[in-house]
Image (cartoon, rainbow, N blue to C red; front, side, top):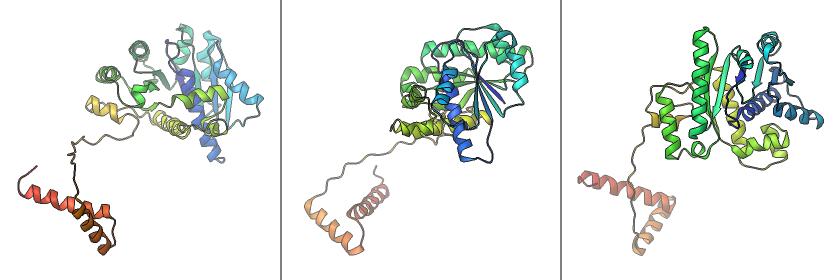
Length: 305
């Protein structure tokens, strides 16, 4: 399977997404030595960030985990090169440059899945949608088997699921029917550390004790699963529900309002609760919950709120 990153906006997260995916595949291979998946990480960007990542790992004697790194920038023959290598590896991950190069685009279109990463910032999403329209038009025009998906990445409003502007941009994109991969990458610091230290996510504890390491590995593995099963965010949900469900793998339950109460307890009541709890060998809190449930029931019986 060939999975290519494509997007004309610089800094949108293409290389980071590839390295995150590599972390997921490397971790799988480490955990399953009898079922190793061979992976080619192909850098077709002249900047060569992915290539330097692989070279740094090799210099430092890092384990390969079934992953090879390649650098191929012959635009005219990229499609032929990918088709030649297709059956030599279980997976080929292609990192592409930000500038649109038509010859390289023809190579990208030989992929099984084309991923355009984007944040929920207006400028980045605008560029991502333009790329999606371009790719989908070519797929339709030439009747290609490729699938194009948008991958939402790392901005704070996505991580915290807040931010009115980000939610509005998501709603517009979702309602327009664009295919959004049902996963997300939000652990900014962990992904920055990958390229800084030339390690995979599960190796990060050697150099970073950040709490986001395990979350980042979970996101990488979830992204691989979403790509392999082509799990797209369902189109039949309310946009706000879809926004909250992104990456959870399930529809959210309907949000219900909860009544909040403030309770004043007098000293005599507290002494009674202590005695009540001691007699029944339960905590004071459990005793209080019993009385609160009873009080709520009596209030409902009287028609009170």
